Length: 325
Ligand code: GTR
Image 1: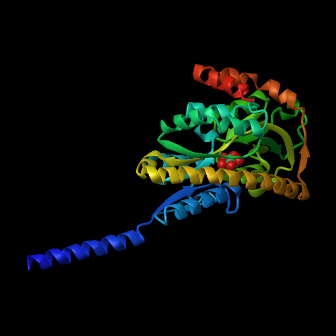
Image 2 (image 1 turned 180 degrees about the vertical axis):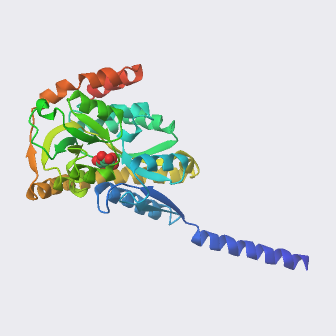
Image 3 (image 1 turned 45 degrees about the horizontal axis):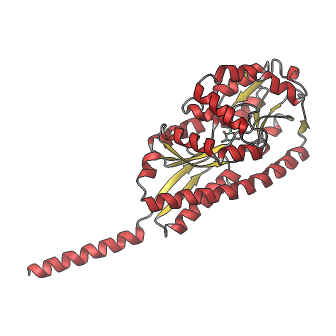
């Protein structure tokens, strides 16, 4: 009798383990402010496919695009506290939390996108990753977001003088507020999803972003003058809640890191194609692209460096970035 009970219990246990193995899939949620099909959304979806395949279905990723889980500031809190496990956001909203994240947001620091890649793929990128851990986040990848430029509904901008008195929405970071002030304009930080109607109703004159965002958020409909001043080459960041990452086995951690790395190559390709496509689309829709005197913009940024690059760690990082050839 006792043997039979043991045997039955053993069988039950084995059966439940098998059932568990077959159905045990952990679904990780990831947020993105951009719509379906945007290069960052596609890249995180691709990351999810790779993770699913390489963990034999034990993990899957669900991407909540179009700010379904909220605007970036809110979703950053969600991923830090573990309400969601993953998040793809811009680097700039971290500027007040992770000191080192200021460096890649500084105006005209990167000489080109290639320079930015070299910096972020190298030791400085790793230094920033380590700093994010202090905020409870593991950086899985840096993605491309090209360069950001100003656009407005009033007039074409050809020099810094044209910026005077205009009101621009900026991404939620003090660096951007001071950058706009240094150009003689007024900055209003506000969530991305509110920008279109704020321009339309005249609360602001314009904003600043790259071509794919200008296109997909439809800002070109309400602010037709796009001035290619390229004030920052600001990367995106794909992060994971640190405790959620720590729960993975070392083998799974490697799978996640490699999948993220593979998704970077994919995102860079998608990004390059999207920039050309968006630029052509907004021009066809009547956007006027001007190329301002860039040196004037570069010279005007001195106060931003004087105010925000005082900490010795940041000073050294800025020097290191400049030294990367
Ligand atoms: C985009 C970026 C978004 C968001 C947005 C903004 O370029 O990809 O993550 O930060 O800018 O300006 O809010």
